[in-house]
Length: 349
Image (cartoon, rainbow, N blue to C red; front, side, top):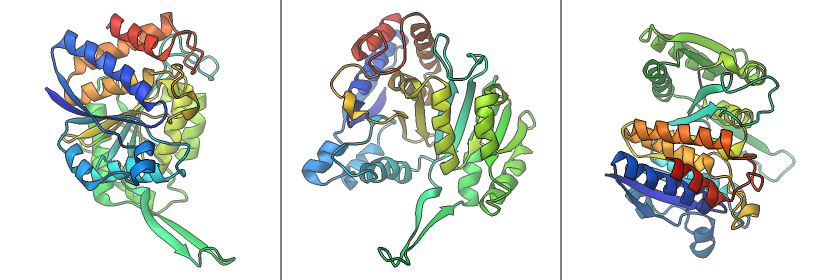
């Protein structure tokens, strides 16, 4: 029995979450576990009605669950940044979800913008530090609104935060038989304080993992090589900002946001799983949004909970559906409705 908090969020989030839950229910029957779900109406509509984003009482309830299954955040009638910071980032910080895990995997039959690259070439994982860096919120304004205005945004990197993220990445490489090279993505030639810390900790911890090949590259080089030679990577570990950027690039080379899943993880504690795309409000209620990113996020959640067989089979079924059924991964171009795609996966499972 696993207790799951469901946060559909905004826009197409509910449609995506419904199909993710549909597949999870099919996995329940096949693999013999039980998911006890509870829905929460956190998001733009609640904020517009009540002014609440993440009440303290709700946050305390969320801490009691085994996992959180999130839809999407972003409402057209709410100023950008309010919900993203007040709900999504706040959940990451308050629940100390210090790892953002992003598989970048091209399934058979899915088109990629990279010429002559296929599923054997695009199959790696990004481990992004999720609670520090430039997103910690340190900084402020001086003389705001005047011609002499100064804005300062500080990147906060602690040895504790850096080490635990790096250790997760090393352990991930150690535990996954097909992941033997760990690449640190940084900018040691310019950001000489923050990434000096990252680099020293990287090589210090690396001595504890003799089976893992250590690699380093600047973030600009990695951005080039993800396009030119994605097959060079097994696992990439990096800070919050660089991780945010390169995982969106990863989503594009794996076929788009419709297939991009992610996890916000604190090992051994409540963790949160979500499609990395936005709420796509222009598609709300039309039944055309691609639910596969949500379905894959559900598989990641099961793997985190210890249901690895079910997670692996869901991924296999998604690959089968992509290669044999869908015309495209783009909204409105799949050849099936949102619910029909969920049916395809659930029935095959």
